[in-house]
Length: 513
Image 1: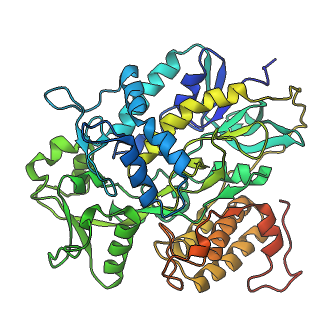
Image 2 (image 1 turned 60 degrees about the vertical axis):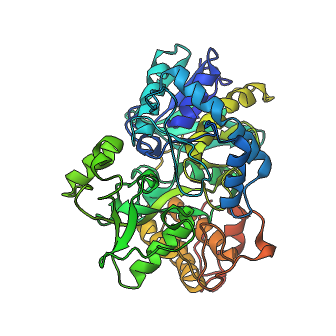
Image 3 (image 1 turned 90 degrees about the vertical axis):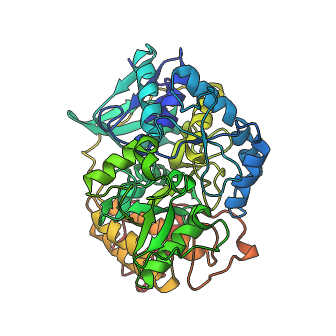
């Protein structure tokens, strides 16, 4: 019989894999939807990992940059802890065999990205950092006897009782299965697949947020969604990312007239992402097209500096050495997520969350570029000790058989979120979205649960009646000191307020949440 005290990790990105390796030689199980390494945002990470390893740098400066960009909501203690672990994180990955890019003298080649005061972005393979780190971690995970990998099995729901987590329901080739565990770690990644235009894989749809929400865990900072300002504008869908590192190497933003419309602005093309995304959005709203001009810098060096991006551009009929690259903002990263403590523990005993699905307080209202991979490595490693030390009341999970759980369906929800949770928001649109999402909840079916998650999301954005970091309200365009705190949301908010927006009390069918 499976030992229910064995930790179960849901998700196979950098955070989940580092956690699995850090448990060794203690046994652990990993549950992934496809083949390990076949999907997930970690694979697509181009920018690199931020760490204060330069001779002119210091983790304290890195923490200061993180707090400044975080819009007053980043936790100073968390920022200090994670940034001070940055040099260790790079050394840890290097020991595992990650071939970081180096200068001829052997020192690490350090890039510059928006919001950073120093060159501190460590890359591997130029713009292939995420893929190379993942390949290295996967090789070690597959070679570690204490790690069991269950592939082609999608987690759909958490099972719990009054004492805490009992395990995970999942759908695979054999139908619905139950994986008993009194120690479950959600490492399910981001949310971009729920939006019309994203730099994330379509499979990143916020399932971990939804499972935690339905199990009773609070979510926090939900309204803070980072739009990357330079996705390659190929239409809607999963858009290719043009890394911030390209701008760090000298590329500039111009419009169809060749005008560098950010010239003279503080930090120009290397301003924090929230500011730059709004600037690009506004210029497009004013009838212009926006392009990234890399013809001079990096110019001829583009293929060697950014081989993956160069290949993607060529596939779309563009050569960055000769052509302007059309760009637009697209959903890139979610600063919010499942509320966790410093040990990544949630409000539910036996449930932890790590990586983008969690909200540690490190990023605040706006993530500093390349801090996400750093957080994934540091928190993934520290999590193993936290889980191992946590007191768990041992009991045998006895659960009834479960009816087939419908696949998460977010197609209609995607359209509603795209128009209401864009680069800028406003009250009337948010209130209209709540009405539409409640109608989707009432319909039932596979889209019901995703509509509930969307409702919680939009409600959080409506409550924060100010502009801060990645959350910008046209009707409240300035920050409000009274809102310099984090916003916690839960199912209770939906149950209390679902009839407040354009519907008569008692007219709702209700839902079984």
